[in-house]
Image (tube, rainbow, N blue to C red; front, side, top):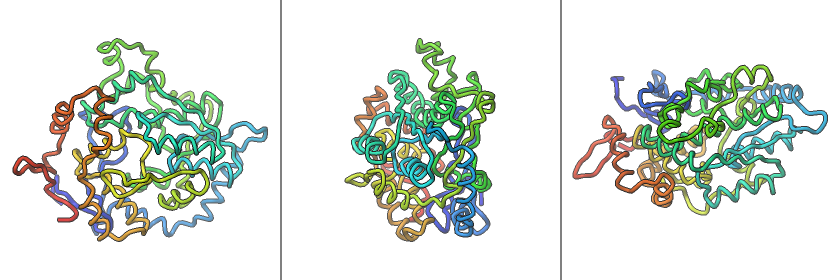
Length: 393
């Protein structure tokens, strides 16, 4: 394959421009990205691992999980595991299974979305009131969080970065604060396109949540720059400064993926969360895709996927359809149809909310979009942009 050539997986509908997970503290405009890999047969690493999953001995993996949980299980009724999440289907499933199937006593902890959707807030409340779980909701300084979101959009075309950072940090920080030695996440993001080898490690890489403060970059800028230019104090950034690795190691806190031990199927996770925690899909499909239950908590999330379309030529429907092909829910032909129909749809519903949140005009928004539009992927004819290469031809 030639450099910069677009290739689509022959099994699903993802392209070779699908970026791998990034350590957000190192994310700046000069960052060299890693992308999903394809084998000689044109199959992406996510589909390769989906095939590997069919041959894993999941009963053996569950026994490994039980052995691990027994090691950390509380004997005095205190919290014995932290589960970070929003109350969406994945975190709802993770916390509920750990408590009611495996007898743990989880403390769920939430880094608040930028702007809750109505269904997102309802599902968050149901997580506790229907699911029967304890929760700590952390809401960061709204003024600073808005600024960081705007900087991330202007400098990186990545408005969701402040939330991703907080979501990664809040679990380790709470575990350290409460002296809880176990933190559990849902599935490993490597399932969707990172290096396949990452899927065979049940523990999360500490690089995602532990860095020296002087090396932290937020919104494409170092903390000291933001403090100087916008008149903040270092103390304002406490929620964004991770627990040091030495502290984590001293306290012997461990971080695991439940998806390593239990076969992770997003649709089956949704069914479980609906039946046991009151999780509800939206009443209408999400703009940019056909689904109603994935990533519906935050109004800004809609623009996270729209910006991936601009930078990488992949919208929300591409991600949703690809994982459903891998899990045998739809065929590739159906996925191609859904991508063609929905992938390029603009998230109009929350556009005004987004502009208000980052204090930006519509003209400024689209000027920034055009600055980051990947010209290797997009072409303009008759004043209209379209992708040069699509999975639907």
